[in-house]
Amino acid sequence: MLRTHTCGELRPEHIGQPVTLCGWVQRTRDKGGILWVDLRDRYGITQLALEEGVETEQVREQARQLGREFVVQVTGRVSERHSKNDKMPTGHIEIRVESLTVLNPAKLPPFLIEDETDGGDDLRMKYRYLDLRRAPVRQNLMLRHRVAQATRRYLDGQEFIEVETPVLIKSTPEGARDFVVPSRMNPGEFYALPQSPQTFKQLLMVSGFDRYFQIVKCFRDEDLRADRQPEFTQIDCEMSFVEQEDILNTFEGLVQYLFREVKGLEIGQLPRMTYQDAMRYYGNDKPDTRFEMKFVELNDLVKGQGFPVFDNAGLVVGICATGAATYTRKQLDELTEWVKRPQIGATGLVYARVEVDGSVKSSVDKFYPQEQLQRWKAAFNAQPGDLLLVLAGEENKTRKALSELRLEMGQRLGLRDRDTFSALWVVDFPLLEFNEEEGRYFAMHHPFTSPKPEDLPLLDSPATIGQVRANAYDMVINGVEVGGGSIRIYDRAVQARMFSLLGFSDEEAQAQFGFLLDAFEYGAPPHGGIAFGFDRLCSLFGGADSIRDFIAFPKNNSGRDVMIDSPSEISEAQLKELSIRTAVAGK
Image (tube, rainbow, N blue to C red; front, top):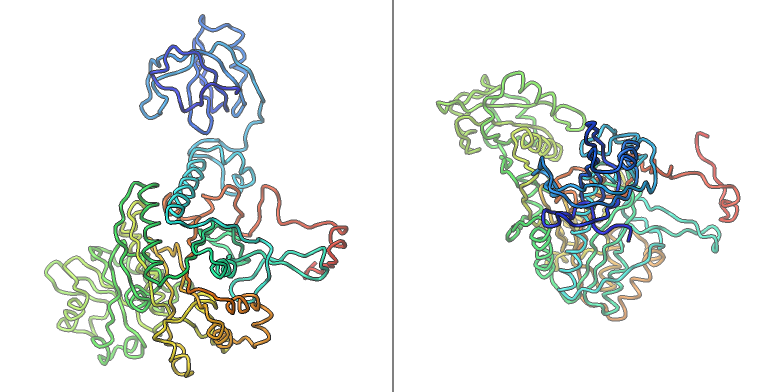
């Protein structure tokens, strides 16, 4: 080994020992009579000291020539540091350097390799190998490692077997767009990269493997945002001979274990919430329950009073922002403009303040006397100092807009603390959702999700198909869906019926999923599973908005890797070998 210790290892008990360290030069400080060098590796930073009259002038002159990010090897003795730094684990010692070797010089980096850098996102992504030297980025990847190792320990203890599934598979029409890979040996035919190992894990259940998991790469060709990447990682799991409650208990245990091992927190038992209640009280199926601010429906209280906005609305609904009655008229006008933005979609905002004396002042006082405004206050269980915010319009659109407003108010009022965690299960999703544009049903989760057994008769009538509930469940933490799954269909007849409801002909179903339907005829066990967004879990544990911060070499918002300049064109010779001719629109 070129070193005896790492740069984060030495402590006062090592004082007097000869050591050899290797690492990168973080910075140098030359005070004339003494020269300090901070040496860094992934374990930490150790201060090197070269004092006039102690070290040879040759070594001091070498050290003066060091630039940022030079790779060096130093030998010396551990000494007590005169000016100690309690903020550094190695802050009580330094190395009195006796010899120094430059293993590799370095160009001046395009940005500071510091916790707080001067490099923008694009520049840091171009030089990601340098960005990865920064402590915050390195710590993110170390956290990712700890989550992965803890996941494997827990699942191994529950008798799960880790099995790899193929990366080159068959393209299927449901879900997001596939990334496709041409086959040289089968001209004109293509593989797809898996959006998830769904069908393979079901086949493993048919194979009798009983309990499977995999920390696996998945690929989806969809528009990107903070919590999306074209390639991402799942904790993918499946179990046989189980019911929904078995799945929930097993993987609630996993998440409790991860919080305990990685964060040192006990999150307790996770509450359950139906999809219907999530939509009714929070306006979306992944509610942030770190704070209350539940929806209160006002139709019965506000209609018929001559205020057209409420009288003509399908739904009048609001939230109570605790302690926000101090908002000024300017702040309320700004909030009104905020909800009217196209991405929110509200037509306006009605507000009412609960004054110190308990009276209510609203923006629609001329339509609603104090007696009726007091009923509003009672409906919200509002107290003096609270602010009521009310939206009206078409039901689904209004719930969506109020959901966004609720989250915004939670942020403004400091209720969405990154160090506070609130987890729950959302259950009883609809099995199908109707797409008006295409005039047909789509699976809310995927085509292999089992309906609730008691809802099976509802599939017989077009009038009740939309009421069928799925045997499906999502885990939500802090308003983020971190995992989802279902009990699967394992009967060929029921699966064929599901394909039919989704608009597949028998021939199309056989062509796309014949291998799975055929497998169901050879003794498929009842089974179910779940997949967690591994990157999302890591970002939650790390207190970050973007999963990109927890991926070693991520893509940018255009799906490009600007470091290696990918995707890129390939040569005509490669295209010819693959029997492909390209014609790009607009070129």
